[in-house]
Length: 287
Image (cartoon, rainbow, N blue to C red; front, side):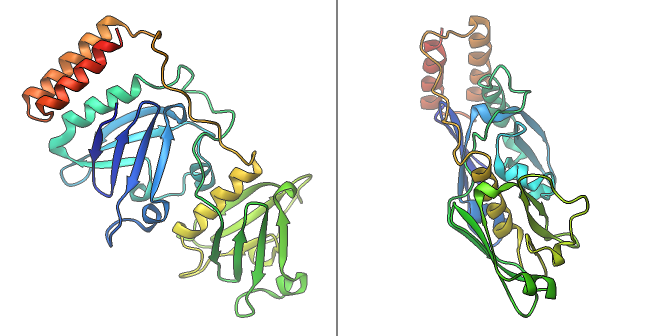
């Protein structure tokens, strides 16, 4: 599509094969967004797109990721607060019609099997290297191994006895991230093979670091967990799918409906003359 939709805390740029989300920087922007900076979301990574009323005169455009498409969301496991969801774009309510148009455009580009989980990650995890300070140690990851270096001020005697730890990616099967915004937050590395029936508490487990006030915040520990998870599950992200081939024509009735909708946006002043002409030409080219 090539268009840009600016919202609160983020801007979505609609490209032929993906949505490029650029996050703003500022004191009101969630720190997680600032840490992520930008993310490219291939259409293949999306299950659906929703548009719902927001708070205080806003609407929320949300791209719903497919299960297994994004290591960040898999690591988060539903624990992110609504305001920190990187797939939400909050817009003023007066832009609802325009947001509805883009939602329809995105839905038309989703994969035929969008409701099914992806076979591999198609959204890239945050770049390496990654590190953060937990309450009881410092965690570092360079793409090949995870290291925990214990702090004498916070580490338990069990961890001191075990000593600093290094975990090759090949020896891990996954990660378990419990948000630092709840009690007993931690990041645990899960080994390959048979796991113990009852894992030790995180503060006693040398394969885990625990969070505390100011230690292991979401914007540091979650990107870390996502980066580790991506390397564990294959060390690479599926390539962005190529744009639709020229021969893959769309239903003429669907094109006509989109042009009609585009005309309504133009008459409402939400789309300029130049934007209307360019988009109409793009749609006609798909016939």
